[in-house]
Amino acid sequence: MQASLTETVTPDELLDVGRFDNAARASLRREFEQAEPFPHLVLHDMLRVGPEILSSFPDSDWRGWLRFDDEYQPGKLFATDLAIVPEPFRRILVELNSRSFLTFLEEVTGIKALIPDPYFEGGGLHSSGPGGVLRPHTDFHIYPRLRLYRYLNALLYLNPDWKREFGGLLEFYDDTSDRKVKEVVPSFGTLVVFRTDDRSVHGFSEPVQEGHRRNSVATYYYTSEEAADFSGDYTTYWRTHSPSKGLGRIRFAAYRGLLGVSRVFSLAAHLVNPHFGLRWLRTGLGARRTAAKGTERPEPEPPRRRG
Image 1 (tube, rainbow, N blue to C red):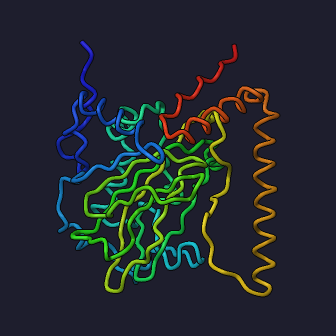
Image 2: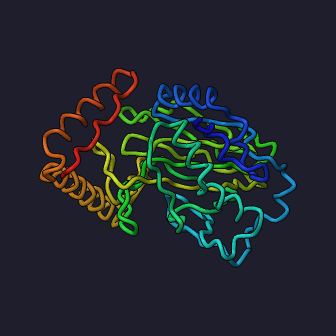
């Protein structure tokens, strides 16, 4: 007799995926597929430990932090090296890449053969202090380091008693109108899973308020096969920008122009690929028409195997 998928969970895991039996996972998959403005889940109380673990979360002057200093994510701190990430956050990162969690993700999203990233490229521990924002964007899709394609993001928030007025709410946007469709309070134990492609615009535009830090754990998931429709390329595409003046305005215009050329070449590359071509174009146009109507997107066409 086939074992239940939930039997892959061990009792000592910190992530509480074991509470979801097969029926619950099937229900979550329907919720994921029907979510707007793109497929996602918001799951609460996903940690089996309490906020007391935050006593070991690194403060802002920890030497292990790396830092973003650009205008799109000012002052954002991140750490990807498991060798220096303190417990229990190291253990949480390991669990997010574990067999039991991958099984859970595949069950609730319907995306099979997911591959975690042992390097946590762009992921790991995240922390944004007062004034921190993450401007709306879509993520890179092609991951050259492992020659994989990005499909899912998982964000686990670590902020007890977080209120809306503290800022830093995760925002989901409609791709065609840039209209904000959903906000998620980044409260302790909240796990957000969403499909990432060139239509999944997300970020947090309201700055974190003075006296607060927005902390989280982030992991991304890939497959070895390209999506049936265009899902992005090597680049993160930012949707909002600070005003520019003088030479900065000229440089920004050049940036937008070069980015547009880059995107045209990405599309052209998919069209000339004999494994995609016009079939890929038809699939992509159909998906965009369906998305514009606000209905469920079709399942990607299975790739043809050679042999």
